[in-house]
Length: 208
Ligand code: NAP
Image 1 (tube, rainbow, N blue to C red):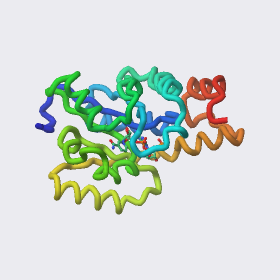
Image 2 (image 1 turned 135 degrees about the vertical axis):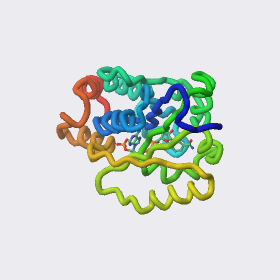
Image 3 (image 1 turned 120 degrees about the vertical axis):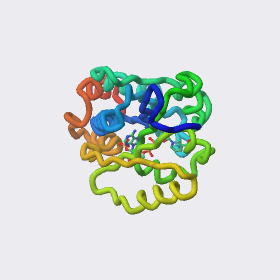
């Protein structure tokens, strides 16, 4: 498939568990949108991620609603239930294929996610096919050791002739794990995520 930037429409796909979504994710999405001149960014909360113990993830409905609340103030952001509606394990390759059939081949997709996840990309389901379907952007947190990522980028470039972009996002110092731990310990989460999401977590007793 032609991955060239000549495509008519460019859409960013923010893939993540978003448990919960926070300012680091929002800043990442906006930074990539600006950098690659994307028409919009579609947040796709992961349904049943292949590599995770699904028992320990917050119910899809809560993760979806929190993401909707977070994305509401940016006209370029949308949230999709595509993966959440599936009862089976969801693989990124299937999600991208579904998006290609929805939007047509004239749309270029940029899959944006954390660098830790991208480091494992060659172990993902149908990795080679996936790499041929869209561009990838790896977002790194401050302090992230980029050596492994750079090596992985070179490996993918030489084996599959595909380029993976990387972007350092200072606000990714915020992490979902830290937010969940803070709620559990009764510590404040204010200014780490949008107020609406903070309120939603409190009102629904999530992460207690
Ligand atoms: P994760 O292991 O929960 O997250 C890995 C790291 O990346 C964490 O530090 C996380 O920080 C960060 N991160 C996650 N999403 C991010 C985003 N959109 N922007 C910036 N940082 C992000 O990974 P995950 O969320 O489960 O998976 C990431 C995506 O890869 C999902 O869409 C998942 O479906 C896909 N995936 C697919 C396969 C497959 O098809 N076989 C396998 C693995 C992953 P926070 O905790 O703060 O978010």
